[in-house]
Image 1 (cartoon, rainbow, N blue to C red):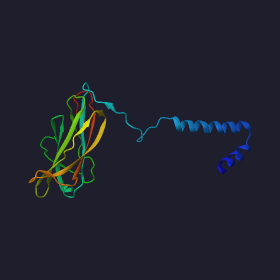
Image 2: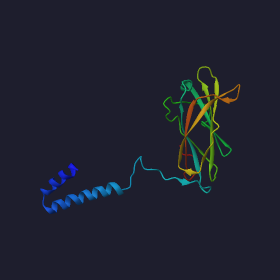
Image 3: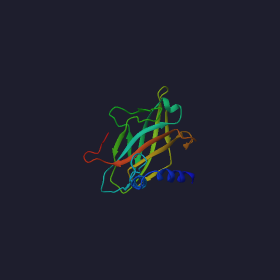
Image 4: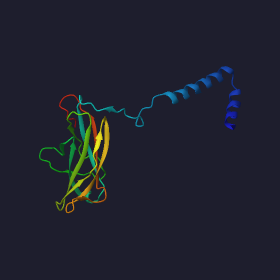
Amino acid sequence: METVENIIKFLSLYPRWAKLLIVGCIGVISGTLIYAPRSGEDAPVEAFAISSTKAYLLVIEGVLPFSQELRNADVRVTAFVNGMQFRYPTVAGVEWMGVDPNGGPITHESFRLPRADEYEIRFEMESRDRISGQIERCVSQQTITIDKTPFEGHYEVFPLNRVAKVHESGVVAEISFSIEDAPQGNGQRR
């Protein structure tokens, strides 16, 4: 309340036209701050329903290791989308890809998806220790259903105990991926 009184005393020192100008400017600034559209990182991205008439890409963005063993390992990821398999990496002659310990992009890779009204996606990952050559399979029972694009997601995988064929506790890695509109043309983007 004291602040309002101080503002009134301050404005009383000026002529009427100056007071109107100050109040008008405050009104314009307030209106702009309230009604102006926001942009930048805080602005939500508008999602559109997936349509079987359009082409989409699955983009594998990277693998974030959570276990110390994976920090010294190479990986390969298999994505299962509506019953189809997509293997990463797909570079000729390359079967394994090194993991960035900080979870940064290894090498982005995109796959043209079959046309559909929605996508059911799950991932499996194999890791190979660079020293011993031992291979460990990592899986999850989670299936993600995607019906809007663009979509960005993370998929957690767990080690599979080879003897008992059950999940061991603890997430060992997170696969970052997205579903994007495919560009016109051949469909591969990166």
